[in-house]
Length: 176
Ligand SMILES: CC(C)(COP(=O)(O)OP(=O)(O)OC[C@H]1O[C@@H](n2cnc3c(N)ncnc32)[C@H](O)[C@@H]1OP(=O)(O)O)[C@@H](O)C(=O)NCCC(=O)NCCS
Image 1 (cartoon, rainbow, N blue to C red):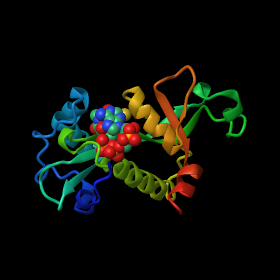
Image 2: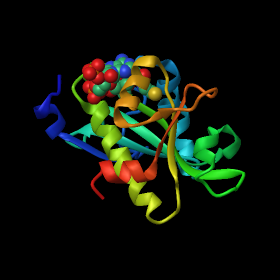
Image 3: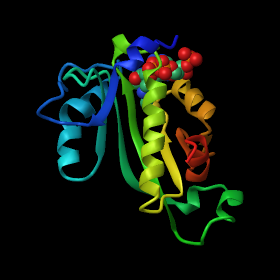
């Protein structure tokens, strides 16, 4: 059930290691929690990733987050009908959506969908300056994969749980 009052208080901005309480965050998936607690800030400092935090009223508690980094898709992993329409380079430029996670107590209120919409807008903006043909991700479970399919992501046969969506499709969905 979408909780509009909750979503109206959500602000999304870059991870600030001095402000955001990373230790308290738990989404129920230990690998994602550990990434935020122990790895994300360091990787961000070193330009390996950019982490975006959703918080209530811009406070220190983390309601959810996502992370993006530059990526190159091995063209050989794409189905032949996709490859035919692409330049014949060994890799295709993309943006990797490495994590989307919402704190356990805030799940099911619509924040995951809001985070994905924010990630889409950001990717379109980035792709306006540095070419990126796809957004790519690895779905953590089938329920998450269903959500991504609803948004237009397609499975990469033989490379599951990898899924991708063309930037042109995202741009259209984002109304840009
Ligand atoms: C997946 C997740 C980010 C969704 O965030 P959310 O705020 O709960 O999502 P929303 O309220 O916007 O709901 C949108 C859809 O997310 C999916 N979803 C909700 N909870 C989920 C969960 N625990 N696991 C997987 N998908 C979930 C459902 O498809 C839901 O649609 P539905 O309510 O019609 O079934 C969040 O539940 C989460 O962090 N889960 C644990 C970590 C995870 O699985 N991350 C996915 C990485 S690929």
